[in-house]
Image (cartoon, rainbow, N blue to C red; front, side, top):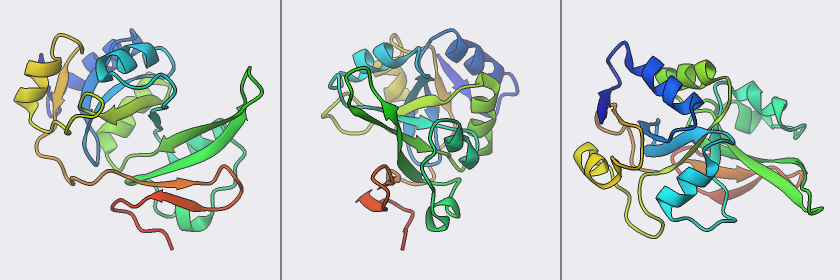
Length: 188
């Protein structure tokens, strides 16, 4: 089913589906993405995407300061000042059950509707581009519905994408800033 982002009832319906563990396709400030509530939807998104079991998804947060809820990693002003936006920040989040260092990639999107949805859900949302692993990105709403409509609760039509580039990814987990992928946000 396709829902219109502009419909006043859309956000509530999507939030209810997400809180119920369902996966949706929603527009972000970069590309359309599969999204689901952290951690409830992880297995479903991996199944739909066909993604390697050990490759993590980014987590969308409502406000830049929400990173501090999950990590004590210092966020430099050069990074903080570009949030919200198309910037993914990898931070140290603890030690796993296997005594391995755990990191998480967070992004605060520059889209008021999406940030309000995250607040309504009261938890971060996983996000990953709409495509099967190893296949080209899907950006057409009708194709998304035809290919993934049976696997997701809905596709939210937010109109044409603002930009075609994915987010810039910076890693702060080791105590220094490392740019892993250059997207639309430039960090000096």
